[in-house]
Length: 396
Figure 1 (cartoon, helix red, strand yellow):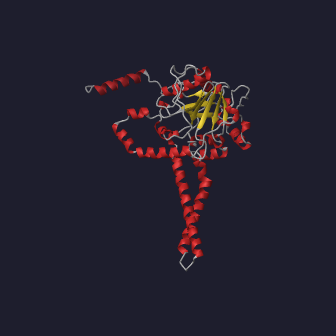
Figure 2 (cartoon, helix red, strand yellow; figure 1 turned 90 degrees about the vertical axis):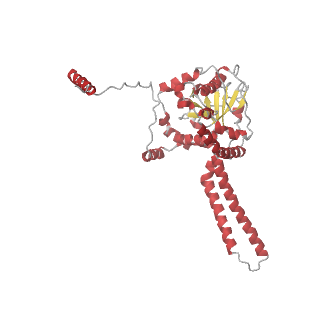
Figure 3 (cartoon, one colour; figure 1 turned 45 degrees about the horizontal axis):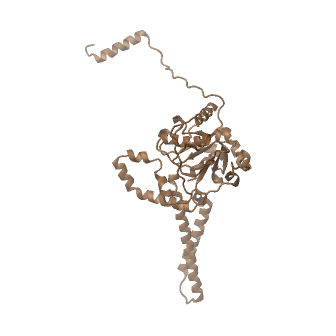
């Protein structure tokens, strides 16, 4: 679940030497240049109404006159795969240690009433399972636990909170994904504000909110995927207009959304697998539908892993200053800046700032492609027309 967020954060703090070495070994596509005019255009587009039918597909965890809190994150439908692998490895470690402890108990009984029975085989098995259990545990703690925490033993969801009173947006995520961040509402750009900013087809992709480096104060952009995966651009527009109207105009006139509980109910684990696929299922052929029916046990397995993941996580909790933001007499949370990170992270962010910086000015217009062929003379044109006529008329 947090895998995409973790990779995004790594791209911000990746050492320049490692990035250059990787680019030399692997041919990477050139990043598209961003101009200041592009950011200004997207910012202006985000201020305009996107549709006359605002609606949120959720999930929404908190909603009142001042607060709108939603789930964010990419690939929520794939949550459960890492949990299944992690639980398999943990079960292997527990079983190896259990066999070892059982062998120790047998040795204890033999030592009390030893009658010359052979114990070499039992000793070998005990040492074997001890080495397997301890070795697997060491490898798992050193290399595997960091991946397990993408889905287990962490906050149950990534959250985004919109505060209409303070005109701020808060991101709740683990420290290894960038930590909790406070952003200004007026600096947001959105994939639902115009069709040219959305992914092609807008199928299976949630609403994307972007804050450029000029508004984040951390020398890198913030990009979040909000809500459920969509089936079409109209759903993106409706979701974005719901958020925009709540922040700019208030909840009056908006449809009352369904509030989702933080309790890990089973259906919360199985329904995300079908987010953004409603249109695909309706238009798919009969053979495709039969194929989906045949692989339905895979959906059941992933959903079970998803549910185990939810139960082995805890409800995310905001810091006190964010929980009380907007209340009378309470302080307004400061915006996140570069100084909020450790010195080593600050240095990495400064080194990589050039990757995300927008070019000054306006994007240059594309030059019209002109032909480099030399224009034919009248004699050559007449000869060519004659050859064509001869080819179509055999009597020529």
